[in-house]
Image 1 (cartoon, rainbow, N blue to C red):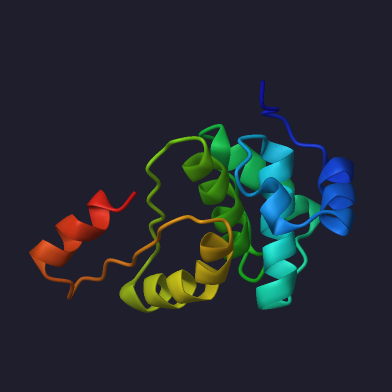
Image 2 (image 1 turned 135 degrees about the horizontal axis):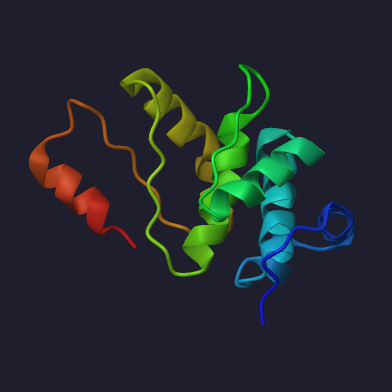
Length: 138
C-alpha cells in the first residue's frame, strides 16, 4: 500500500539517488514528492524547503496552510497536485487573477510534464468550449 505520510529524510534521500522515471508512476507520497523534487531542481532550479514539503502534504489531506509571499506556495501546490493526480484525482489549482494563473501554470508545467500529468490553464478570456475541453483533460 502506498505511503500517505511524509518523510522529509526519505524524500531527500530518494531525490539524491533516484530518477524521475523511477518514481513518476508511483502512488506513494514520498516517491511522488521525490520525483517532483528532482524535476523541480532539473527544470526550474528550485529545491523545495522542508516547510514546502510539509505544506504540500497537508494540502493533500484537505487542510489549509498559510504561507507568506515568497515562501513557495506555487511549488507547494504543484507537489500536492502531482500527488493527487497520480492517485486518480482531478485537480484544480485556483489563484487570485489571470496573470498569476498563466504565470504559475507555465512555470510549473515542466514538473507536470516530467511526471506525465496533463495540465491546462483557464483564464477569464478562455472561451466556453476551451474551458470544457480543459476541464475534461485527464
